[in-house]
Amino acid sequence: MKKSRKLIVFLLLSLVSLFADMTYEGARSVGGAYLEVLSAPVIFSGLLGIGELISYASRALTGGIISKYRGSRSIWFTVFIGYILNLAVVPALAFTGNWELAFTLMLLERVGKGLRNPSRDVILSEVVDVVGRGRGFGLHEFFDQLGAISGPLIIAYYISHQGYASGFKFLAIPATISILLIATSFALYPKVSSESVPKKVTLKSIPSGLKDVIILFSLFSASLMPWGIVSYHIAKFGLGGEVASLLYAVAMVTDAIGALLLGFLYDKVKLGLYVILPPISFASTYLLIGGSGWTYAYLLGAALWGIIMGYFESVFRATISELSGGDYAGGFGTYAIAQAISFGIGSVIYAVSYTLHPSVAIIYSLIANIASAIYLLKLKYALSPSSA
Image (cartoon, rainbow, N blue to C red; front, top):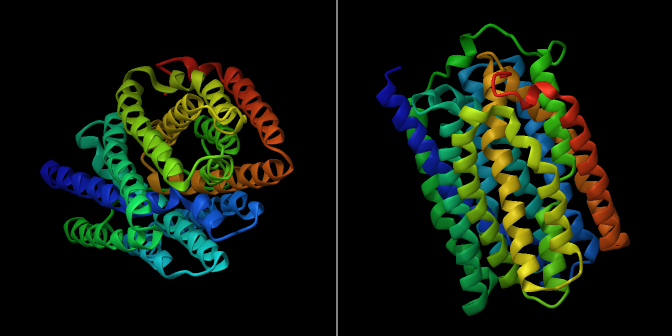
C-alpha cells in the first residue's frame, strides 16, 4: 500500500477515536456520579470496575480470535461490532429511569470497547510506520484525548444547564460521525496485512522479551485505580457530578499531552520511560481518594491519573507493537488476554477494598505499585535504550 493511503487511514482512525472518545468518555466521566443520582448502592460505583473486567474479557476474546484466525474479515468485523456497541449505548442512558438499567448499559459500553481495541491496534500497527511507531501511537492518543477532553466538558455543561439526559442525547452526534469514519477507513484499507504474516507469537510460544513486558504491563494494570470509584468518591463527599466530569477532563488533558510527549520520547528512550510510573500511580490514588477533600489534591491526582493513561495508550502499545516482530495480531492478541485478567483482578480488589474503607484501597495501591516497581527493577534490560 502507498504511504499516502496509509497516512490517510492513520488520520481517519485517529479521528474515529476522537469522536468515539467524545461519546463514551463523556458518559464514563460521570458514571459513578450518575449512579449516585439514581440512588445506587455505593458498591455498584465500585463495581463499575467490573465493566473494565468485562471489557478486558471482551478484549481477550477478540485477542484470541485474531491470534488464531488473523483474517481481515475477523479483524474488521470485531472493529465494527465493537464500536457500534461501544457508542450506541451512550445515548440510551438518556432514557434510563433506574440505576439497574443504567449500570447494565455502562457495562455494555465497556464490552464494545473491549471487542474493538485489539483489532484496531493491529490495523494501527500496520499504518503507523509512516510517522514512526512511538510518535504514531502518541499522535493517535493525542487525537483520542481531544475527544476525551471535550466529551466530559460537554456533559458538565449539560448537567449544569439541562441535566444528564440532554447531555447523553447530544452525544449521539459524535457517535454517528465515528461510525461513518470507520466505514471510510474500511473502504480504503479492507485487506489487513497481518493475515499473511507467519505466526511468531502464540499463547504457547511468546518471545522472552515480549513475555517480560506483558507481565510488567499486567502488574501496572492491576495497580490502576478505576475512575468509576473516583467519580463516586468525589460526588459522595461534598462535590457534584459536574466536578467529577471536569476533573476527568483534566485527566484527559494530561493524557493527551503526556501520550504525545511519551510517544516521541519512546523512540529514543524505549522502556526506560517506565521507571516513574509506579510512584505516579500510587500518588494519584492517594490524592484522589485520600480523604483530604482539597480541590488542589483532586486536580493533581486527576492530572497524574491522566499521565498514567497516556502510558497505557501510547508507549505500552508502541512497545507491544515493536516486540511482536511483525506479528501484530499475535502480539496484541496475547497482550489483550493478559491485561484482561490483571486489570479485572485489580478492579475487583479496588471495589471491595474501597467498600471497606478508602484507606484500604490506598494500601492495596501501595502494595500493587511496589510489586510492579520491584519487577521493573529486575528487568534491567528494560532500562537500556538499546534493549528493544
